[in-house]
Image (cartoon, rainbow, N blue to C red; front, top):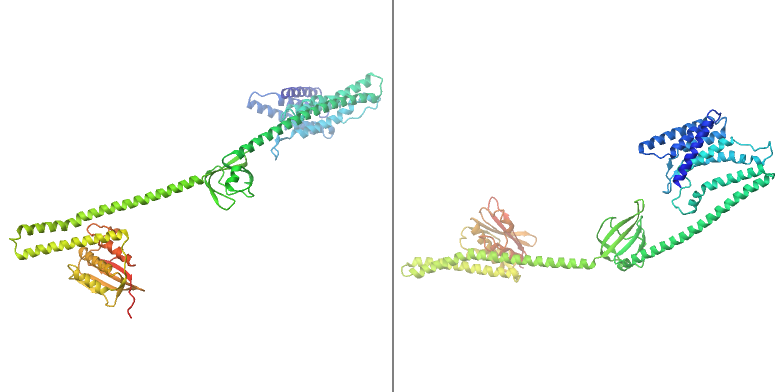
Length: 588
């Protein structure tokens, strides 16, 4: 159809151009048909390249505009033919100009209304003259333009329409519908009334019949052609209806299949429109959320094109953990027409992950306890190797010396050696007591029996048993008492005093006063260099190289009695350890 239409349009262009050549010197717009016919011929001639195509289109547009100008120049003397010629020229110039429609349908071609106007003017001028023979001599009907010019303009309009059949008014995407049938029968429909009129005129001219008979013949032929067209259209409509029913049945079958597929999926699926309104949900989604149908409002959704762990709200107000994905549904143009949200229940996986995490935490705690026990063992071994081995080796060597040279040693040397053995023995006993207390503290079996304890009495007793306490200054009020376990407080003071004597320098200052509401504060200060900064974080730890267990025991015993212990750097020099305990109530 396209090739035949262009061939017909080319023939029409040649015919119109020849008509324009023959009437080049006639008054009126007839000479404009020469450039118009050439322009129509250029519009249907195939181009062999893009550049040649552009040159051809430009030349056709210039010739069409020239024809428009000639027609417009004769509006005053030949209005009908001038308007028809100008409209045909503009239509040729705008043949490929289209205006897109808002609803996305086929673009509107600007040339169509122009061609319709030119064809109507030509038919108005041409049809009455077809019935000249039916009128008495001397009473021929009047016309708005010469019949030859009207026929040429009609040829030009029809040829211009056929030059672009794929974009003209007869274009259709459906090659089997009634519109396609009309397009195929368009030449016959255009020719039927013309043939009928010609037959009527011929019958009136050659026969001795009345004009009514001639007109009746034309009407009958036109009626037959119309009936044939109606029959063809009815048949086409019937075929179209059958095809439509088949398509509807196929569409329903596909819709049922899609619905069955949606409902049979093991994943929960929710379908939404472009505005995130819920359209449909499947069976698994209703089971997962507890809803009977699609919710009135869509639940919180992940961003389109993403996925991950999500919480899907249930009808009872609880949330179920799911793996959610959100995918957009594009239309033919690529725009989003809807969304599909897919949910996979991962509640069991979450429970397994939580159980695994808890088990890992238990293992971590167990590993930490094992590490702490191993560190305790290593520290204890190191301490025993370093601190216990020294007095034992001293006792052993001194005892061996006494046994070997007892008879040769004077009494004063014997007493000195025995005194050193006693000193190291007491040192070992002190270490064993500290270790025993350490084990009790580590297992949490130490309990404090708190009673009012005079601080001055405890400090003086500790100074009396300690060695090397000649340069100790005690400033404590006799009435000052703490609420604590007497044995614990005694061990605390002894260890603080021992730490000051061993690692500090004299003089030693021991003071006590009321630290705050309901508390007493005991301070033990030496005059040494103080404690190094790198030791402070672990000062009250379990083992410090060379310091034994004293401060570790002090901290735990003070805390067991509801108090605190801390370190301060003394001014101008020295270390100060402060113990804060609850004050004993005043006696009546």
